[in-house]
Image (cartoon, rainbow, N blue to C red; front, side, top):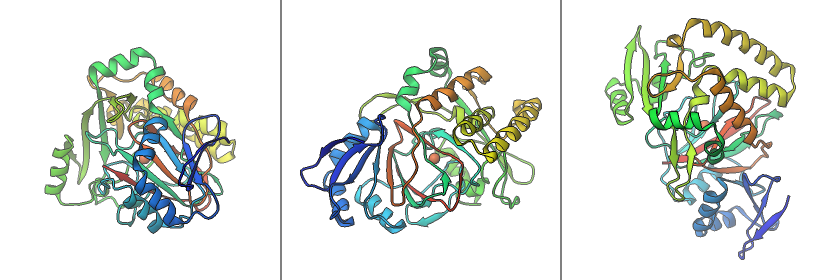
Length: 356
Ligand SMILES: [Fe+2]
C-alpha cells in the first residue's frame, strides 16, 4: 500500500489498497484522530473529497472510530448532501435510523450483481454511503466496478444499439396478499417497494417515475419503464455505462454464480451454481414473457446470450473486491462506480444511506 498524500491538517492520510485506484483510501494520519476530528475534516474539506470522488469514483474511510448506525448517520449529516429516504430499488431493506437502512435483507447465499443504484430511474442517487457495523466470517465483500471503463471497453455494437433504442425494464411484483418476502426470481413485494399499500400514493409515485403499471391476479403488479443506458457525470461530464441490463437479465445470475465459485471455491457456491444452471435452463424454456424480472433493448429486442456474457465478463474483468473491516465507511459516486455483494457466511451487518 502506498501513501500519496498527508493533508496539512494531519487528519487524513490517503492510500490505495492495491495497484487499483478504486477506491482511494482515507486513513487516520495518526492514532490520536478522534471521531470529531474526521467529522470536522469532512465538513471543512468537502471540495477536496468531492474532487477525489470525481477522480477515483469511491472513497474508503478505514481505521476511524466509527462504531454504529448513529456514527454513520453523523457522517451522512456532515456531508450536507440531500439525503434520500425513498428506495425504489429491488433489495428488501430495513430502516435503522433516519436516512440509514440495512443494505440488503436478501439471504447470505444470494449474490447481488454489479449495479449503479436505481439506474433504471430518471434520477438515481448521486452518492451512496456504506458502513460496516459487523463483518462476515467469509465473503460478503461489496465489490466495485468503474462504469466509465465498462462504457469505454464494451463491444461498440451493443453500445450503439442501446444509444439508438435505450433500455426497457419489466418487473413483476407480488402484493400484500403474499406474505413471503423472498422468491428466487422475484424481487420484494410492491407494497415494500413503494412503502405503502395506498393505491393513490402508488399511482403518484409511479407517475413521477414514468412507471407503467399493469395489475393482474389478486393484487400482483407488472411495472414497465424505459430508460437511458448511459449517463454523463453531472460534474465531470464523463460518460458511464448506467443501466441494470446484466443485473435484471435472467441469464446473468448463472454467469455470476460460476464466477463466484471460481473465486470462493466452496461447496455451497458450487451447489448454488449447479442448481441455478438447471433452474435457468428450465426457465429459458418457459419464454421471456413469463420472466418476473426482464430487460430488453428499448424496441423490445432481446439481448442475446453472447451479449449478456460479454457484459458480465467485462464487469468481472474490472471488478475490485476486498474484505470489509469493522468500522469501514465507503462513499461511492453512483454516476461512475457500481457495487454489488458477494455471498457470505456469518453475521454481516452493512448499512446504507444515499444522497438524491
Ligand atoms: Fe445497491
